[in-house]
Amino acid sequence: MLAAMPSALCFLALASLVASSPVPDAALPGARQAADAPTVRALDVNWTRDGLITGVSGALWITSEAFLKSQLAPDTCRWCDRSPDGQDTLNGVDRWGRGMAGKTEAGRKAWDTWSNVAGFGVLPVGVLGAQYLLASGSGASARYYAEDAMTIVETAAVAALANQVVKFAVGRERPFVHVLEEEQKGLTHHPSDNNLSFYSGHTSLAFSLVAAAGTVSGMRGYRNNWLIWAVGVPAAASVGLMRMGADKHYFTDVLVGAVAGTAFGVGVPLLLHGRASSGNGGPAQQSGVSMRMSGNPGGVMLSGQF
Image (spheres, rainbow, N blue to C red):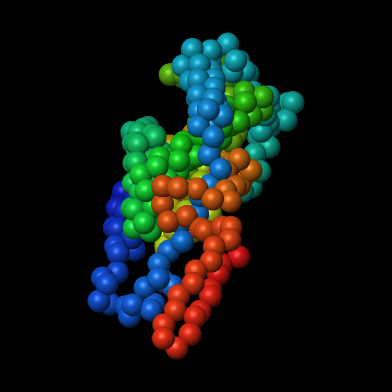
């Protein structure tokens, strides 16, 4: 599983590069070239509005994570998976999922490190890189790609902030803390992080990035935009599996994180960035009325677009 994440992202970039390579002029008859050319559609992007949403969401997430976590996070679990008399009441699905956790402290630490590298580094770079390849391969301008990148980052920031609010409110005990004796729970490396298991932020972020890129690519009409979904979803899922391997999250934490991230990834572009009626910066879809007249010795032809 550890090797699968970098491999999947490499495949995403390579597959997108192949898919976005322009077809040589000689490969198609002249009559088909215009018909087969991708139609890149303009989207509604308001840089002031979207910049504020991204900036405020990102600032609130960073502040709550880096500076106010010890004040905002619950000191004791609210969702403890134990009965009042101390009996373990963890559900069977999550009990089964804990079998994926590393068997040693070193193994769990390795999964934790790799999940951070993949979730906060490799996957975001891979998604943005693949988006660029798909955009440029479909004839979109640099402006369109900048708008795509803004929308993807905006979605990730909103998803991260929502996850943080839910974590602080729910207060579910993490798996590795759940198995400790009560007197040992305050002795972990980061006690303020002990009760923030639900739902997985890494998984939510990963799926929000992939879903936003896939949704935007589809709305734009990029050629072979299905590649984002085909390779990105397994890559995002592997981040969740790594979090389970690190014993930081239960299976249900990861599952809900995937659903929430996908919901934000699809919802934010659709709600805030619908297709514009017209635009520039790429071969956007034409609208309005145009007419053309041509003639030859045999007569005159009038054609139009409505």
